[in-house]
Length: 106
Image (cartoon, rainbow, N blue to C red; front, side, top):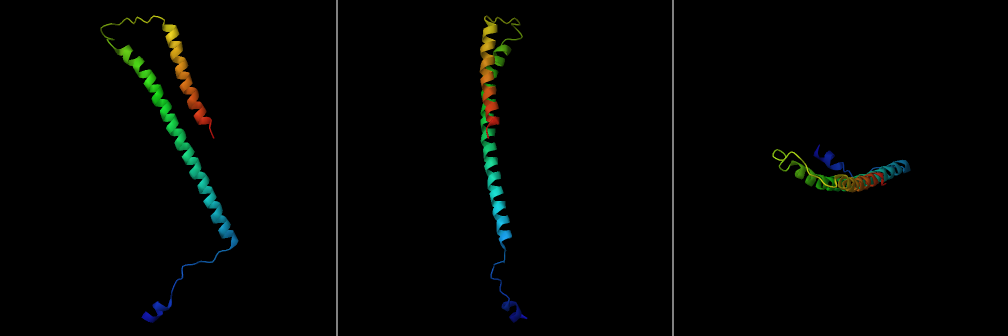
C-alpha cells in the first residue's frame, strides 16, 4: 500500500485552453479597474472630509460667540450684520462649490 501512495506524484500543473486564459485575464483587468475606482473614491472621501472640517471650522466660532453670555446678555449687538452674513455665506458657498466639484470628478 505504501508503494502505491509513493507512485502518485502531482507535478502541480493543470491544462487550460485559450478561453480559460482570456477569462482570467479579463477578471484581472476588471479587478484592476475596480481597485482604481476604489482608490479614486478614497481620494474623494478624504477631500470631502477636508471640506466638512473646513466648514465646521468656519461655523463653530460663530456659534461660540452667539453662546457667549447668552443667559446674561440676551441682546445681540451686531453692526453691519447683513454685510457680514453675506461675506460668510460666500465663504460657505466656496466650500460647497469645492465639494460639488470633487464629487463631479471622474
